Length: 193
Image (cartoon, rainbow, N blue to C red; front, side, top):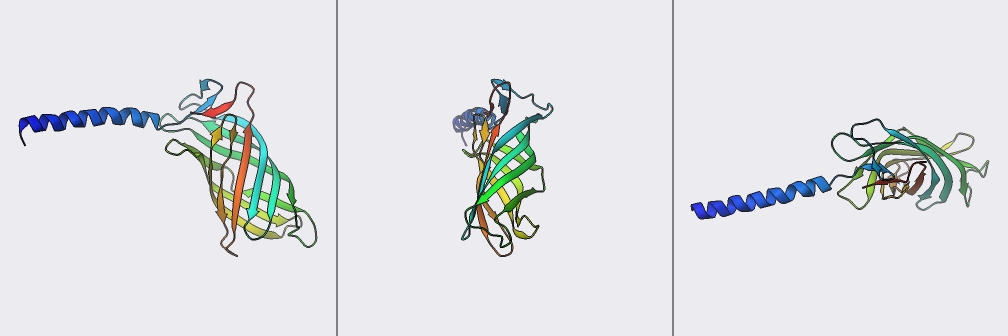
């Protein structure tokens, strides 16, 4: 290779490296309360949430419940923001056609809390919640379904809306789940950017 061609390759390499650094820096999302970014490497911010969950058991029924919980939000020293759904209570569950012969009531229980997630800068979907487990059962304690899997969804100003398909090993059913959480903060809306 001639020295002139070598200089061109070196110059092109330097330009590409310079472009890659800002792109990597932009690929990181962090949590904000109002206009203030949560401290990197600092303690988690505990934020109460209210909302609803919809569970469509494919081929069967749709269940609607009210949701109340607590999110623990933090920005690690390196990388994108993280959060954990540490508490979640699902109540007032409604179903159009009963699944339980003894009762018209159904319970949905979140299992394995906390559910951890990380903000996704490479995706328009925002936040990916791992380890989601939902038990659907009759009020008398008879388990009907146990669904597991991840949910993923956008982080909007003051809310998180993960959704997706959760699977069940037996009897091989699928549930399409949407969890809408409104984050409550007295000092500005919670956002990710």
